[in-house]
Image 1 (tube, rainbow, N blue to C red):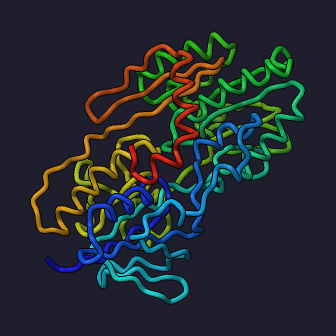
Image 2 (cartoon, rainbow, N blue to C red; image 1 turned 30 degrees about the vertical axis):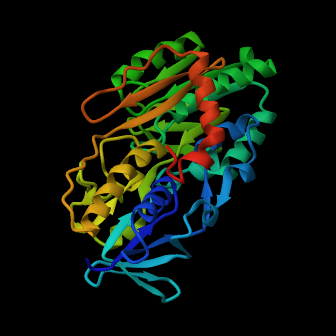
Length: 379
């Protein structure tokens, strides 16, 4: 059996987990596992949702990537300059080159606010820690008016997040005593508030019950920060006093430059084997792919287990027919100390139960235990 050079690009949920699983299954004599990450810091991004409402500060939502990795994994911190598919080499910006036999791309999804004119000047979001802190300050100073919450375009990571924000915002404003002085409007670029029908049938009535108005098929085209107006492609407009939007998302430019990504930067990926459709020596995990599942840590979590088995079998020259079924499991906060749960795969849509306190408690507990369970492959 030839020695394997396995390189993982990206130290998020998928990259960290797959590296640790491979390190557990392959010996030093069988493979060298190298994880390359731009910053060497690992953030628990679902925690950003709570920062605007006084949740855990950013420093408690971040860890040194080295602390999360097996000693068997070599961590390289730096910028990738090129994925040289012909030579099977990763070229770094500092000139160092890392050969690979198997490459796992876990470069995630990237915010692209520049795709929407006026976003940087006129909108808030909570998809980065610094932005969530600015939103926290804006909410602290807010005393009434119109808050518009919504999604710039699809897809984006953590699909329930903007809905969760709207529900938590309603709670927050009621606790502060300014809800009766505030109109909340939730807009969606499609004909429902959630892309999944079965989830929409649960959350849409909850929005109405909380007095959160909805604007459907509102495809954002531009923001006028001076006039405080959001305009759609068909000319409709939404005035606001505070605008909270999920910014446009795109794949990593490096994968497009390597001829792996489509026009939006997502990598065409086999939905079951998780191989790049352009290169069988390259696997894709998490948000970087074009798979028809949510861009979320949960999807990456389930993908990593399948992918580890496939890569190990290939490295050992053994047959393996393990397939990824599209499995995802996540919670959705619905406010008032309650949440629901979404469990689904490629062929079975979620059937979310009515929100209750138990699911909220489980989500809160998972947020605390994430560091000890998920990156290290304990669940």
